[in-house]
Length: 190
Image (cartoon, rainbow, N blue to C red):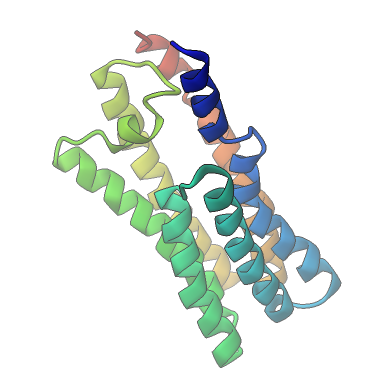
């Protein structure tokens, strides 16, 4: 491969820090602002941080991940409703809708025999078809459980507890879930 092609490929490769900034930066902004002010100011700050994260991704890679776009669109709708109606329930519902949507899309991809996760993460994970099927099923079930858990906490606990769960609980549960998939990935590695 020529050095011009290698330089071009390296220029398009996103920096390692970009993924976490786009995925977690707006939530971190939300939590920091929430700790100092209130839910409504934090929601506005998260909307601005989300837009900035998408622009940064587009500027550096000329690409925005589809999951980030879907999450941003839903945040714009539900965060906007939260601010417009001055009602935190809209923001709480947004987390349920996103998790439910991801779960339904993954279950749908299984029914259609399309391994969506392989298309998204195939470059990072080299596992066989059965491994992708099982991982997709597990992820679909995980997002369904996350949606139900968010609804339970949003409807039975205070907004402060919901914020802590949404920032730290879902992150912790996601990390535990990912760690639990290590055996499946090793077993089905190509």
